[in-house]
Image 1 (tube, rainbow, N blue to C red):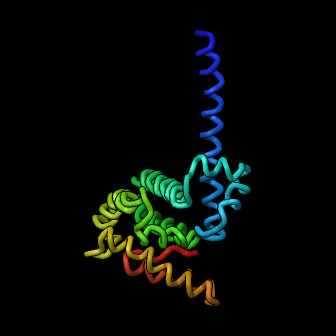
Image 2: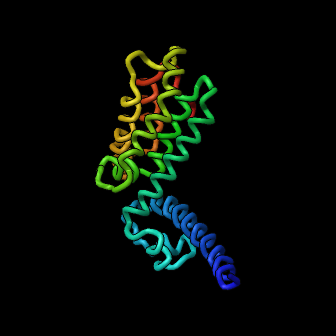
Length: 196
């Protein structure tokens, strides 16, 4: 009995350490993927998290599992933000621009999700749509959303941003980003685009 309690006591901090290391790895992967893309050497992520590569592989057997955890975290952020915005008149517009922010900061997200081969990501698009839909319904009822615009239409704009990102990376000007935001906003909403 005393031995079992000792094992339980020594096992508990290990579980807490493991959970903390996993959180550190996901946070580090979000930052490093945003800076360098999803093909960055995994050692870079382990270093950023302050853990060994062995610890990284203990939590994530392969790159796709780590990228899937990052995507899951991003979708959870989107869902939380949608909940926070649910009582606001401009919630749909604000969530849309947040989605654009995420896409502009981490362009690899759209590529990975559009690819469709990553395990565990099939429901993430559905969850994003479900988070967005109540806000769009409110905007539609208030006349803030153009008639006929669907949740799918709003989500379709995210891969469109990838073309602008590619052009900007190839020597385009950053003003293309703000112009793209304004054009997409005007195509979806009846309200003027926010000043950026």
